[in-house]
Amino acid sequence: MNNQILVALLLSALSGLATTIGSIIGIFVRKPGPRFLTFTLGFSAGVMILVSFVELLPKGINNLGMFWGLAAFFSGMGLMFVLDVLVPHSYMAEQPNKGEREKSRLMRTGLLVAFGIGIHNLPEGLAAFAGALQNLRLGVSIAVAVAIHNIPEGLAVSAPVYAATGSRSKAFWWSFLSGVAEPAGAALAALILLPFLNEKVLGAVLSAVAGIMVFISVDELIPASKKYGYDHLAITGIIVGMLIMAFSLLLLQKV
Image 1 (cartoon, helix red, strand yellow):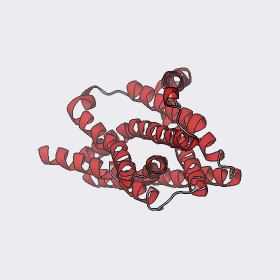
Image 2 (cartoon, one colour):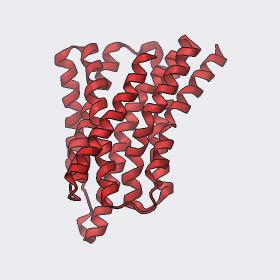
Image 3 (cartoon, helix red, strand yellow):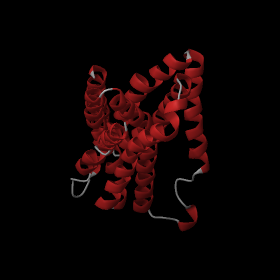
Image 4 (cartoon, helix red, strand yellow):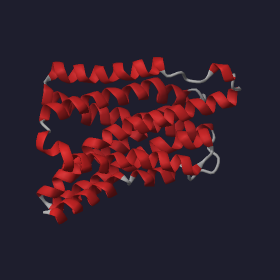
């Protein structure tokens, strides 16, 4: 049994750290220009919106019922609204120039995406872990599908951080940390949650995470993608992000 738990934890870790593949794609461009940023920020929004409304919120409503599922969803949005009000976008006392303000905004956007995706990855880690405990073949299938699913999420984190800092290492490590949430979810399942977790608790978490990710998309990502003036490219990025995430969800559904 101990060996099975170790294999389950390893599978969850490998699937979660597939975000690093997306992060490498995000930092491959040597000097990101406005078109690249327009597309990738729109892409990030598409990823987060589709996964929220197609995967997370429906599961929350299914577990909690319509009223409480939506209540948890809007609670997640409310939490992000409060954080958005309380956390300043820039330090006005420093009076940064326009370029510095732009970098500060992009960095903040990247970190918010990392936060949302990191929370979202926790139940995925639990799913991969539980599947591997039940059946090794099932665990491998879930891990592979989740790994593919995580590649665009890594891109969603690394692109704005790289654009803000010009540092490949920072972009990589923030994306890496968002992926670490997946094996962390598996470890929590192994140590604490698995004996006590029920459908209602998981449903509330999933719905709240959906609210968080939608807020980040409409408040940060979409406005940021459109501000460069390439509106059609921003919409294209959103659609492509949705299509790729839809494909990954179809893979998850088949395993």
